[in-house]
Image (cartoon, rainbow, N blue to C red):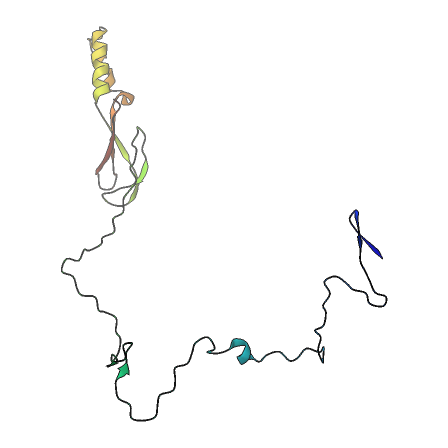
Length: 179
């Protein structure tokens, strides 16, 4: 008899009346092919089968002595306790500190948490004469605007430095320098 597997031919010997199927279960040879009952729970778990049991104590009076590894008797400890931590005179107190992200100040009001009063605020602006204001005034003087036009930079907010204040506690929060 021939069986095809892919493009190859395989020859198998098959006796008439007995068909063999690859991978089929063959019953064990013996007086009975009926399986026996499964093992009991104790047999399956095998309680204490991996841990040898110590021999039973010999009958007689017992003392408080236990035989140690060297064969000598020793007294067992009454109980075991965890060690109690000893108070340290040099103990360090831990304090949580919240660090605020650095804030970049510009020429516009910003919303932030005031570090002085810890409230959410929008900063108030105050304009002050800075380096750019004085350089603009000096350059206008050199160009011939000495009749009062050289003071125009002191009236223009875009040429002055900006201070940011808290509207609640009036604390100075930061400064934006133009130059």
